[in-house]
Length: 292
Image (cartoon, rainbow, N blue to C red; front, side, top):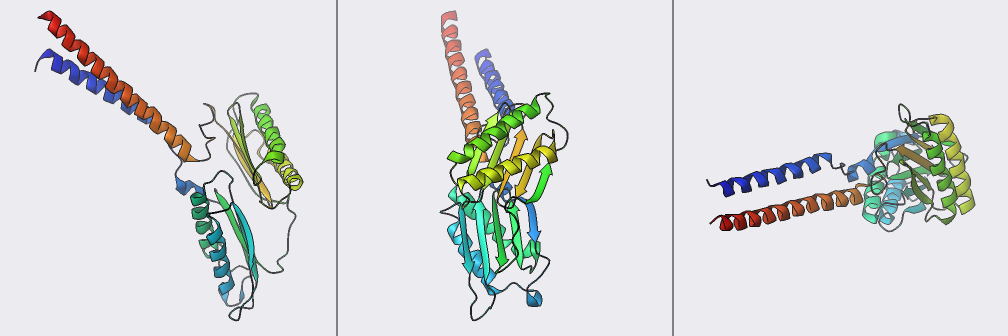
């Protein structure tokens, strides 16, 4: 083996090592399965007679799933039939940044889990990371649209002394962005804090703004200086996360854009590495020729 072949092998090994290093340090993409993660469930204490869901619930599930690919919010009723005297109402709300296919997949997963998480309850509410789907029997008691249903807060603290100021600035942007939002969805980032809000699609701009303001007040009290938090009210929810090393590209809410960026970076690294090898190889050949 001559010295030039040996040099080429060493350069190839170095390029491979650089590629592996970039891959190990690339941010992991968020899988679509994360959208189906259960956040919370709400089940009525009362059950349908006989301990079985009536056919109208299955019909409602099909109606909701059938619309999820074309809209982020939909509500409808499944009237009583000859086979069932029970009329049920239901709706779904997908997160505003989901694609049609991701929304459809999430709603299908949520509606199919009604029975698993709530049995034969006369009302069920399933909140996944990417969507909400619920049903309730006609005449089921209603609660205030700003009643808190669930909250979760991260452990520890945001670290930096001005963390809460950063978070509150992001919250203010959420509240201000509701007026111009599409479908009640607002997302923003400010100095390593990412925040998001989602209202039910049929809320007016004013009602959505009031709901988000209430949610912000709840999360400030409930989560304090925690690095992340989520508060779900009946008609809206907000979430925030602190990223010490900067908010991921795309806001950290979905993996599609992040994975594309990683692919571009890695592909570029491979291309540059290959170009460097070619240039060095050509240089070595020129040097070899000059030596003769």
